[in-house]
Image (cartoon, rainbow, N blue to C red; front, side, top):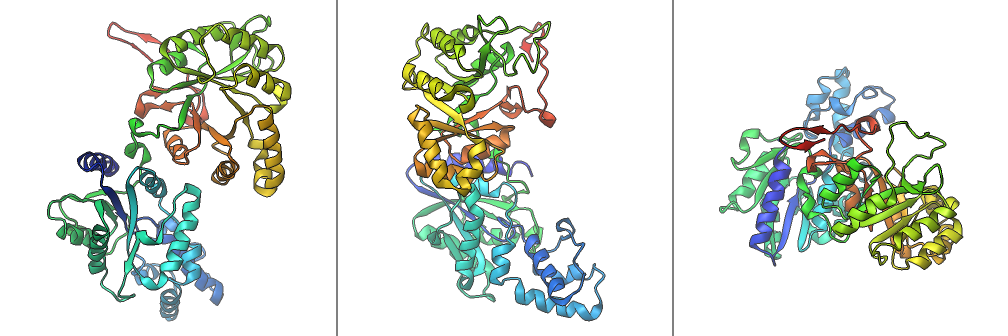
Length: 495
């Protein structure tokens, strides 16, 4: 079950290597494959209660719905509904299930599916098609609702990539599925995979693919046809797992990745051995105010521990420069700290292209940012703007004026927490205004990949990704920091 996304990743790479210039396409069914139809079932049944003053479905939960949308009687038989009302419910359900309101308000995607679609949509010469048994008469509602859902994920479905049943509600769906495959092939696309929840649909598609070049992926959700109808070479799965589908080597090259919190020997060693280009260090002056050291917490909030060893800025710059990597400095203070940092940096071969400064407006102020920009005009100079998110969304004109003022100080990138609400809308605004964006506070691999799919200029993360053999500090289980213990054996040095 867990391997269907791995099969998809390997098959896509193989087909792309065999046909590097072809327009590749993956086809998705909609209902039961992209959309969890239980939400539409529940919404339609509750609309019966609202209209008729009943309470049959008040306590009905999504997890209690385990029937296909066409088998509603089987669900009603299990509920305490008066026999005289069952026929009325069925009549209401059949009349309202595919209404425009239901289509628009009750569509919910399965977790991860939109991200998978987004991944293929951003691949070169790769397209996502929709092959649905829905009739042509609801084309406009279908596209509108799917694109409304897709906004959050930067997913958009074009009319030319939607094939629908040309024979109406009563048209044979299996025949329509075959026609959809042949249609897209005739349009010049090489179909490398089809995702569908109905076994009989995949069996029919297998019949027009004798060379088995199309990977048949069975979305093991709720389906009406028998599982035994699945072709022997079909692969089933329930979870659209980004971490299995997307490999580190396939990450977009134009997005910069930053290893957060390289403030200690363990993280420094992990970072230097990784394929990540940028290290973020938290810099401040030591208690004696005579050295630039690395530490996230202030000494006022977390006093210096008896056994704590402070790394200096030089301790990390030496190996970073030696390995050709780059450094991002999160400046925790203003005033003398900036002058001391610039003095240290001038002793190294930084030209600005491999330098990045981050600081809060209330800490560095206009003077600090102008000083950094003047010293290294080619560097990234960044400001976190989480507090401005409500202003960006509600009064964009005022927000733009404020960001333009920051830009006049030398700021050229703005940063937001992954946990900020409506982050996709803010990213769209920043992109429209011509600003680069960074996403930080990304806790795990799944979130990291979701953030990458939004294609910001950069993503900053703790890189606590055991699946990729990265063990950065920070967002471990329950958001607790990891405790590191160095274990030396005769075989190896391990964490």
